[in-house]
Image (cartoon, rainbow, N blue to C red):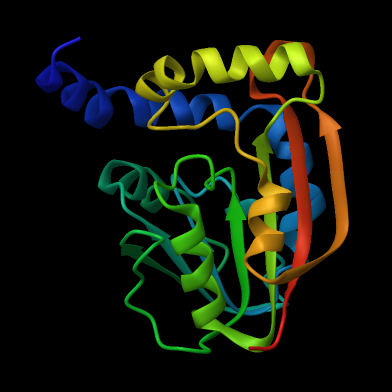
Length: 211
């Protein structure tokens, strides 16, 4: 596909396909489990179309800043009913115009797969978190079975072109641990058959280690 066609597809088609796929019960079930743990000043990296909004506990959250580089996705988010005031910020996770130590909680939901430099994004997350802040993450990544991992590796580039740059074969637990977070309350389970190519669910709460 030509570069201009890919650009048009990425602006006009891919955001809506990603929104539809990530609205399914396979994803919603994990959102219900993890997102209500957010509290205080919350920054959501990879805010997308705002699919996490219904799962925040409005009693616990004092402020929510949704960060995403995709203006089309943020426009979809702004159409949703907001349970409280939400600030939408168009920026990349690797470089967020936010103050050091701003956030009590950072939420990342199905976004590490699309971040071009996840290590840089995690360093930014550490920077904006308070010293005792928490990272709540829920992701898809490497499959358990070796043959599925090989297939994910083989299809990774084509899948990324169709799904907004999504990478199939990352290991979220390893990424978060390497960024010096202590992972607590973790879950690792297979996706249902309809989403078998996405591999396994990875979710947990990472506690920021001291510098």
